[in-house]
Image (tube, rainbow over all chains, first blue to last red; front, side):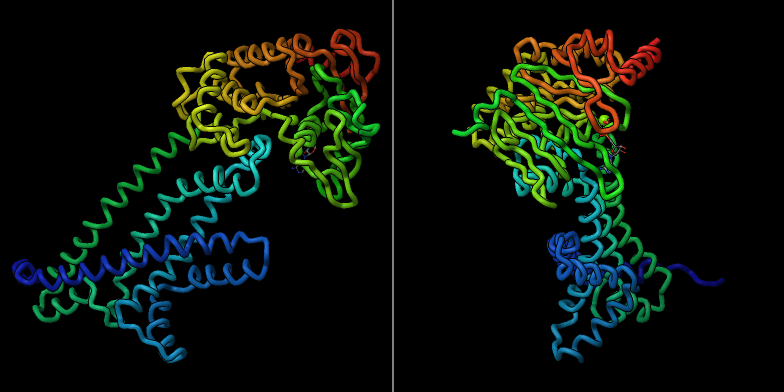
Amino acid sequence: MDYTLDIGAVTRNLEPLFQGLAVTLQLTVAANIIGITAGFGLALLVLSRFAVLRVPAMLFVEFFRCTPAIVQIVWFFYCVPMLFNVFLGPVTMGILALGMNLTAFNAEAYRAAIQAVPKEHLDAGIALGLSPTQRVLNIVLPQALRASVPVLLTNGIGTFQQSALVAIVGVQDLMYQGKTLATQTYRPIETFTIIALFYLAVSFPVSQIVGYLERRRGLAVR
Amino acid sequence: MNAMSRDTALVRITDLHKGYGPNIRVLRGLNIEMKPGERVVVIGPSGGGKSTLLRVVMGLEEIQGGAITFAGQPYISADGRKTRIDTEVRKKIGMVFQHYTLFPHLSVLQNLTLAPCKVVGEPRAKAEERGRAILARFGLEAKADAYPSQLSGGQKQRVAIARALMLDPQLMLFDEVTSALDPELVAEVEQVILNLAAQGMPMMMVTHDMWFARNVASRVIFCAGGVVVEDGPPEQVLGDPKEERTREFIDRVFHIKG
Ligand SMILES: Nc1ncnc2c1ncn2[C@@H]1O[C@H](COP(=O)(O)OP(=O)(O)O)[C@@H](O)[C@H]1O
Ligand SMILES: [Mg+2]
């Protein structure tokens, strides 16, 4: 293989990559804001006693869990504008598509954490005279929210990585800029390696934090 | 006011029926009258419904029949298919469970002050002062700011007792509070309960520790098959039971103990 590496071809063109990274981070942060807040609301609906609230919420969650993210994104970009006659600009569309996906996964994280609060703690709350609302606010949610943090972070970093999929519908994120640069410079190996390192540089610290939080929780639980 | 208010019982359980679902019947017409100042130890075979009885008295369970009054007031009744529980009466009863139920996200002191602040609306500073005083009485003042995960099992159970006492209960329920503990930690928890007993706290408890039962009880009730089989002073029920089933059970327990 007579391919000589030329990292310079990429390092001379870092600016578009950083612009792409900025878009990727923007997608990630905005999708996480949606996912962390709407996911919590959705979890409450999934846990509702009322089937009219519970069933649609469960269907929403299952739809996003049971279809590939790339299909969701493509469907969202092509079908929503045609069906509803709205188009909001590629970055906004990307945020909404990723945000809805993350909402579904985070709802599952919240639901599992809420249901993992031991029933005995609720009995103790009753024995202490706390009302149902006080039990939820003072016993269930503080424990559940803490327990869900590592999963929310893992899901959030998953969305960061999945956001690369929006490149195929023309959002000018890190992956899109990488593809463009690789084509212009004929340097796919250098370009995509550096792109991968960009993603790694963001994901790795977060996954270390998740590991640390999980170890600390493991110690605290017993 | 009426005949009820002249009732001298602290807890009167009348014809209590309780099951789990249609097929599991646990309590089948149980009657107990507990007088003020009594310390009732409930013994009986595993799965016989002792925890269920305490949970019903705590107001944690639905019942299918019967009624409970507390200090002469209606407390729990089976009203057709629904169970009616007077939650104001329920606040006069405290309970400590077999498994640790301290809230892990709150410090020891916060565990103690949560209910007084939220339920009674006691000012935080005052609740904390009372909390520290109770902890000091239990030899736990150094643990006020610790979290439950930093405590031994015996310390956790003592904190759980302290937490229940913060609400000045008129009756304490203890369901096998030492059975999850390592043997060397049992005594410190039993001592706290013995001290409470000496101060005249009415209590109803389940324990498998016959030595402890004999020391703490003013009355022992042997429950089996969902009804009271034998009921009397500890010396009699534990030492010289009248009923054959009680005798068999006591023999078996002491035999296991060696
Ligand atoms: N939540 C529950 N659901 C179904 N069955 C239960 C439940 N709690 C207890 N039981 C059953 O009721 C019976 C009495 O249980 P329990 O009151 O815990 O007995 P004990 O404390 O005397 O060992 C047992 O057969 C137990 O399996
Ligand atoms: Mg039991």
